[in-house]
Length: 420
Ligand code: EPZ
Image 1: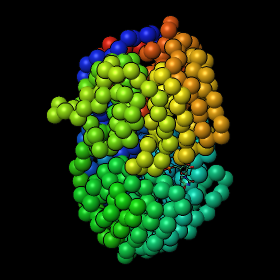
Image 2: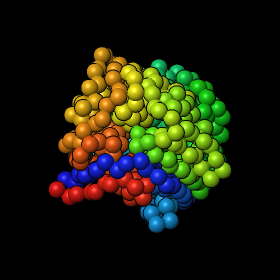
Image 3: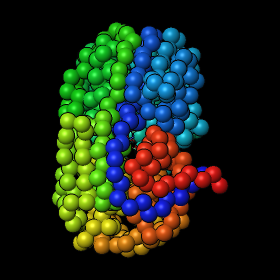
């Protein structure tokens, strides 16, 4: 297994180019199944999760070309030959379940391995299934799989008890080929939902309201191929914003949509960091003012993103004053707290709240990357730790951040990838 060895790097300086969004491209790749014509996706990040989605699409019958030198993935599904998202791929990547909506829409059947829990929580798919049933599908669970089938999807109305990102995406991709009108109420409003809707509308779908809590879809009989450039990754953006702040450096982020990271900008400014939206990109400085504490509550978009909670916590351990974080989205997204405490953070958990005393000089230690974003948080902590930090289980990190070490080291970080 490989690990990262990180040394105290001092303030980071320079420019970093943000890659295409992992959480935008995965549902868009799945949605390409909806047409028998080719779709070309640009600004595709070279990630393990994208590889897994390519493998899954090939197993369903797609002809997939990955051209990471030019950041392009082309998907051509002339004929669907398999209707299953197998257990080994779903356990490797939960987003595999996003092929369910397109399979149902195009073929009337899908057999999906129930994704088990993961480090951050139970991750049920009840809202996905509720949506498919609202469109007329019959759902049967057996032996760890869900079988969905329908002669013809019929438009319907579904209220999401929680604005689930994945459920909104899966229901949208099923409804675009349903007969009649579909309304999704209490829908997720994330930028990745808007990007998916834009791609589907380019294919000839009729979707209105993406980005609000009510999405209306007029079903059409078929969808043609389309070319699409995915949005920049707002969580990679936030991660590098924290890198500038936690090292008291000054970093210019390029290929950024400031609107997509408003909560992270607002909270960093509350802590005294300087964030400037310039023509050439977004400048983040942690070296202007003394940095102080703030409180964070994770919420569905446009609230503070749960995927930025671990990284922001690592930063708050180093500022003056006590901060409180409340994680409202996932029930177990504090696995990184024990690892940060190994570095001297002294964080305490009270139910859904984490109390971060702050004012710490973190001490380098051997720590584990318990999930994708927790792993990024441990690297950020290692950049400021006294003495080397070793982060193991780094496959979590490499599934979601393109050229992770290269980008950090170009900013002056000292991160070494070591194969154990
Ligand atoms: C997406 O996961 C993201 N993944 C996650 O990013 C992100 O943390 C999450 O949205 C929330 O923003 C991708 O886009 C590939 P949800 P998803 O359905 O769709 C509950 C990362 O680090 N829920 O919005 O699985 C669920 O238990 C990953 O890039 C149900 O109860 O998230 C959770 O508490 C981690 N029933 C909450 O909703 C359901 O049917 C949010 O889940 C579905 C979800």
